[in-house]
View 1 (cartoon, rainbow, N blue to C red):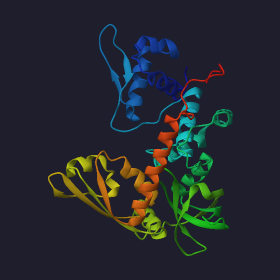
View 2: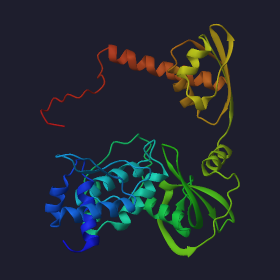
View 3: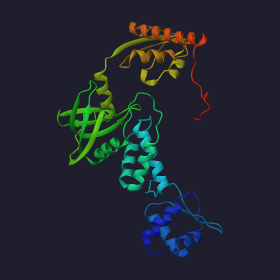
View 4: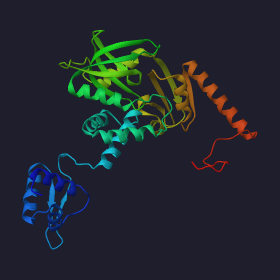
Length: 339
């Protein structure tokens, strides 16, 4: 192989497999001399690839972790596997998958050959994921279009359906995509409203990057996640909640989610939680029911009503099962079919 760039790419592809390659074997694979292999290894090192050499009769070369991420070479199967995984995670807003994964997906799909993009789409069409149940699924192509516009500083056009079902057309300067774990949101400057807005991505349709460039504006809060939190809190009613727990404050802190606040000790075996929340009282009642201790709701009375209704519902379910009604589903079937 006399073409140096092509030979370097072939050499790099071999080194990216998790094994150590003797210089003689690399030379045989590429049809060059061991001396040429040594020169090519030096070239890869100059490009930032940390290639380690070991001495001895069975010594050789292997690629090790460095201080920076150099470009990777992927074969067809590896590229398809990564794209499918990123699509699945981005499309259903799985907790822990944030804007970085969407940017990676946008970069990967940009360079995928058409035959591999077709394989990725076919695999996704043929599979149905089990989601968390709120129905806020997203076409990953919607995310990649928006991520590309954010990164490239391009204006976006799209259709938007508000919470009351109103359909509008928007043109925006996209700032950031934000994942809450349950949903994706776009923070952008709305040119029609001449103000900053947040958009639920699952309500966006037919996003189109116009190609028109813009200079990024300064976000009022300086942080997209903080701006989203403020925007959501303004839309939702706030409720004053006060709950006392018959347990040491350390125990309650360990079981109470941090976003609900920090209880204050009122004695060696008691504590008090005072918060202002935008969470629904039904959800808060369910979360309190999971606490492994006795507690009393001091306010609001509506939260006590939610707890009473929840307790009655659970009691009815337990009584129905005890009387011989159909119990919960199991992994077994009675029709002999495989899962």
